Length: 470
Image (cartoon, rainbow, N blue to C red):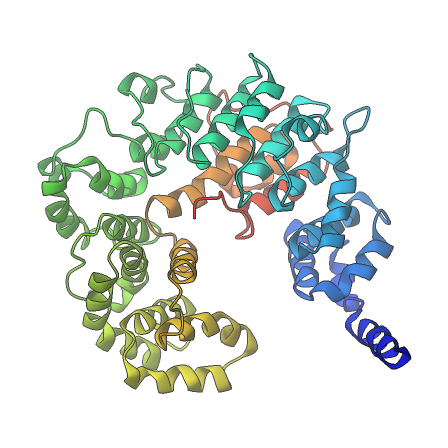
């Protein structure tokens, strides 16, 4: 039908769009954070930018090309992912654009890691294999772990070996951490915080005095275990804030007492979210409401508790309704507390709070409305599909930095950035990489001044990248 064809053509024309000029200029900005933000906003425009991305593909300086590839990966359409796939194809020699593309391909492409032989051969160097593996660790689907190990060979380099083990751990396996390097031991320590992972033997925890991040070591301490009484003499500032994870170390009968002791002492972020999130994961009694200052940590615990024991979480949220309502009335400028309070209202599900949600969704700024919309679905009882509800609870709890996953969301990117960009100018410019432990030096393929490393660091340390732990 000519009329239908004309309508289809017109609809395609109307949907197609070029990003605003301000976003396009952002792709060339000298600041990595601005480039990353511009790429995210372009991806948020939806499938209508596919034509524009294809037209721009390969154009401009390396900064712009990497930004375009990030936008294509985050857009996630069939056409945009084809661009990432094309950029990640094998070449004859090391190439900074391919290294970047391999990381994005592993992270965003639904077929990444399924054909281990072909994907492994996309990379030409140890560094490029690391880029691929870093991406795959964040991929939301199973990969061919056995095939990847076969392609890596019996004696991969220490960086590849460590990342392969981390990938297997994230995929739910139990890798054998036999390597003796600082890179591999530190990877084992971090991965021991994953649910179901084996404890790190005491001799491994102390294998690199002065060469290991002390908070990683303390967070993973399990063997020999501490007692509840030992907490009373433990300083709780600085690195010792990771004492929050002692809850997983103690015998079940001692956990509640330890939590009750620590809840009034670990009040500052991120330790409060680690503690309360761990308490929720262990289905402990979260007790009465605290203060407005502790509300963000308490919300982190409630969300984790709602995953394992929803009825207990609802009861605990109801006890916090007066405080949450007060925060929403008085904390107009503190968005973190308002967000925590809104989540508590949603978990409690009290009908008298529906009016507040409706008013916010009608009158609040667009960004806040968009953030609040799925929370309103929880509050109104519309998230009735268990898997969808669990996914949102997990996402919100991670955004609050809850429990061991919150700690890993903070520290795992540091570990991977150490592996990929240590020894570069970009590493010196990131506060997250101050005081890199000895023995974590990478071997970059390209000059240490290459802006590739700054873009890698920005991607890893942004909220965009996460290990696949949901």
